[in-house]
Image 1: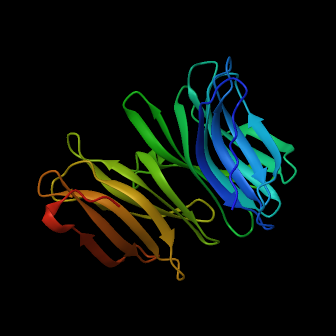
Image 2 (image 1 turned 180 degrees about the vertical axis):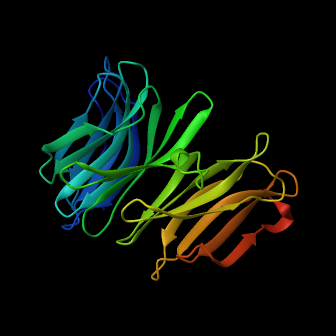
Image 3 (image 1 turned 90 degrees about the vertical axis):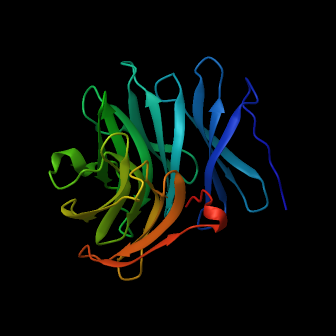
Length: 278
């Protein structure tokens, strides 16, 4: 129906990340764009349903490389999750709120542990417009999953760190799901040697820990959680990739109730014992 190519003035090096439709079916696109002296920037564009470019907005937070991570549209607001490199050469997370007319309402760094790298991974919102960011913090051989809750003005409601909870072993984050009652976050948990397990943690809307469930294939290798979502009854449905019988990868799908009980679990293995991936 239509096609539009966007190119930064300095180079042709552009990378699309994700896109979404607003309430009027305008296309909001999120990209990484190389701008020359300042390296990579975050580029946000808005097209009408007919392909007309309404505006573009460039985010260069620290004057060095910025990386676009995720995009969320909530009512008349556009929220951008990105990362940048600080003056101390550490990764930092950035959340930016744009109006539908591209003006920045706010831009701020996400609160992290001093001296640690902070990599944001996922962005989601509840129906009351409370924002949630899932991230991984790391320094040396230490890492931890992090969930941060914001209101629409950018103020932090609470910050949950998995390493501060003795019942939560989540070391990195790969997926996030939110509804009005719960926050589910998934990622990896270190196993013995170089192995890692699939981990799912459920919090309530106030950031309090409910439970964590773990799974590992019989090979004891590098299992990973790929995605998760809430069912109509707030049960957590997930998809993962696990290693069984040596280095053979299988698809794992399952569902946990809100009390942490396993409702069902299914492993899928393609013909020929091939390497499958969720």
